[in-house]
Image (cartoon, rainbow, N blue to C red; front, top):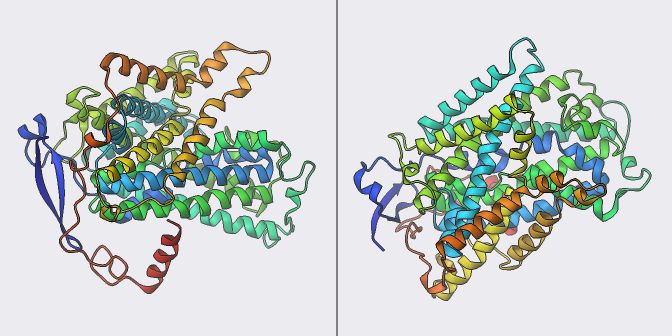
Length: 541
């Protein structure tokens, strides 16, 4: 394999060697026409911490309480949270060692099967490209809450132009905007948990609720196992997008340090923002509250809004409306970023037209960005000029894309680790080693597969409507067609352990490296409390 060795200098780690495969386009473009490693540690860690906290938590969490009861929702979110953390540990091991953009589709092609890489890459791209259209529609609905006289399409166009401006000029701009958006969402979650505890104990609102909502008729698990299973589906939607931290590896300044740190942040995010938020909602609001089911369509009855109102905050609906507007712009921003990098990775692997690999002078894959926004815009237009059936089918297409991606990441990690060890390579050379191998990967594959195939069970209740069954399983059908079609057409076999490439694009141990425990990324001494915090998280991750 033809390759060239380059060196990247970093103030804290001397020289880090990275092997990059040479390509036809790279040989004809200036050296600057590549992805720029301008995402700093704080960007990636904050994106991992709060980047994809969105409508799944702020709006749909009430539906989880209503369908599973307070105990069922808590258990469901905890189990899916454990699944997500296992996925991130697996992805972190691979992305820290091979910091490339569009990581998991490339890893699947490289370590499992080119057909799997083709499948998961296109499924993930469609997921986020159509997701952009959903966010454009959502922004229009949110703005009508305040300004009813302005046509909703105007707000969607403004949002689309804003997303293009952010994503066409600098990845650092994307990182900076996502950093502050994530900061706002993290602050709201912390504030919500504090206010919720005050409401539950009677410090705010004057009513000591305690754990009475866990002892209503039916108890904490009024719908049994089926209630918990229903929560799996909603929780998977809420966690969707957490893998974006792995995609940022290709544009991180110091991926062998920032990616493992981001993985550890995910654990904090799961416990603090999701599990505790579900616990607070379950304590404060009874699962029999009718408004919990309406929270998915109206911010006025979002579970977050209901808790703030119980604390006496009359402005709660306006606050949540503003936060959800930020959330939708943030989700659209992340959608354009992640899908454009995935499309670029597909093109680099020969699974998409080659011109999608082209990068402008700011280090942005501009054709990939434009294609993503164009597809998102077309999907959005179907919601305006059709009966809505086409748009509903489009949004159903990637409904299980997150779960398919997570299962493929775990399959890829098993193959990655087995191939790495079979070639006689030491685990100590990896920047990050995922613990509990292979049990975490097996857990993800088994549970993820059960949820993927079981998520449309309700469509088989009489009377059975074929269109509902197809809509529920359209994402799975799409993935199956992509995989089998590519397999039959290309006739490529699985990658053998001896043929796996662990050199191209991989991290090489720096000649000089400061101790992370004692120094931060700027070379300044790390405060004692940060060292203690890192040690505590390091025990778990």
